[in-house]
Amino acid sequence: MNDEVFLNERVEVLAAFGSGLDPCRPLKFRRASGREITITEVGLRHPAPKGNRTIHMFDVTDGGADYRLELDAERLTWYLTREADHYDPQ
Image: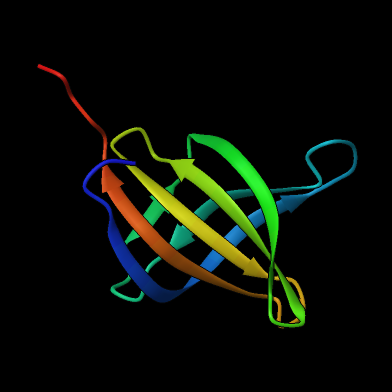
C-alpha cells in the first residue's frame, strides 16, 4: 500500500464463509460515514496474535484504493485499519 492512512474505524462487513483454503471472504463493507465499498479482490489474509485474541487481517481492494480489514475472532468485530490510494506510475 502506498500513501497509507492508519485508521481504527469500526465497520460493518458482509462476508462469505465456506470451507477449503479460503474459509472467510469479505465481500463489501460500510464505513461509519455510510459509504459502502464493494471489494473486487482479496489479497493477503493472515492471522496475528493481539494479546490473548487472534486477529485475522485481510488486504483488499475495490479497484481504486487498497484497504486492510481486521476481524477480531473472539469479539467478532471488524475494523478498517488502513486505507491507501493505488499507486499510478504515470
